[in-house]
Length: 561
Image 1 (tube, rainbow, N blue to C red):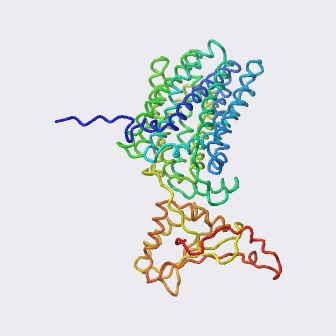
Image 2: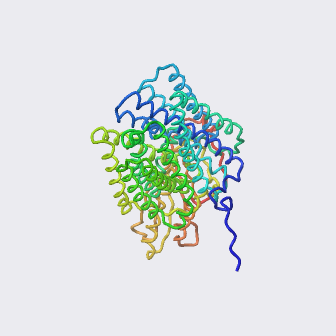
């Protein structure tokens, strides 16, 4: 009996399969160097702060300064990533981080760095990376085929955590031998390979047939989509809670090295390296974890394991034991974050991918930033050991959230459906014409009334997350078989966008609703301008301002809604 052939990790769904694609491989390797530089700077900044002040609050604020921008500007960053060329957005954002890193190195070399100056430049670097994140992550689906996307997401996590495995140790050596200024300079230099690779990437993008949204409207569209997507909402809440509680380890790592282990910069670097090494182990096993366990079971296992690891870190005074506990903590932390990330990536359609990933980044970074601030204050009051034990206790009870916010099942990516043909239009309209009212009449057998109504509740969420408002469903009291769905779109252009945003699963849902319809004729659809005076000339000789602004539409009716 012959043995089955061993699967290569480069084959099919292997974790390294995305590296077969040249663009992804080059960007991934360059991002590895960039992440290495960022971790080296983090070591330099955290250790420099411990030398300038004894306040645990100030030390923990270094992590807050790096993470807070992601929470504050991630939604605008996500909207920009969806509106503009993601390659250009990534280049601009990396340039901002490069300027911040270079300026910090220069200020440190001149001896002008104070605690507040250090936090300011960490905030600038963090702002550049906050703008970079959504553009980078949402462009992954353009670099690899859909079947390799989960592995590509895991590889991006591995990139950061390979850097975390070696970067802190290298940073500790650099800080110990050449000072924090050298760590800041190395970070600035290591941004250059990623800038070069992105500059040389010849990204192919299909121009949209509709005008670009304004930034404020794009942000509103993103928030609206997330608010009407229960699965994404659940993932974001669970991510935020995990970030707040689990952020204690990273925020207090310098104090763990200094106060619990009585070590220096090198000890701090080694402890960070142990955490990063564990994160690589966790990322490499994401595929296996997804196969063996449901999303909820996997998150529960990760949080309980992390609670035990944090407890061991709090009670240990031996560097070896602490390092082992940090390896475990890093592995389960990375596994949980990657599971959350994959859940968002595969749930969001392409048109809102950047904004959905920005919300994910805001959740994890906001959780870490808020948690770091809180754990720093608690450490000032009660000490490092107590703060860590409180964190472990909270982590151990966090799986109870699954009773109310159960992790949704995640399948294949929800791809965009074919664009519907534009509806018949005989009235001159501009993109600003509106509000537009859409009424759809269904004739449904009375025996199917309850089932139809249940389906329409899902249709409501679909319409609203794609741009509709004021949705309602009504039943004729004189003709109980007649149902009328009604919703608004702010403008004609918003209506065209709403029609073009449906995914395949949403289109199938709409078809499911129409399948309830009885009668020889199709579902009846009315599209009406709610404020028609805007389309009426006041006088016969009044120039028709819409003549040069009317959007091209097909003359034949197309699509159902």
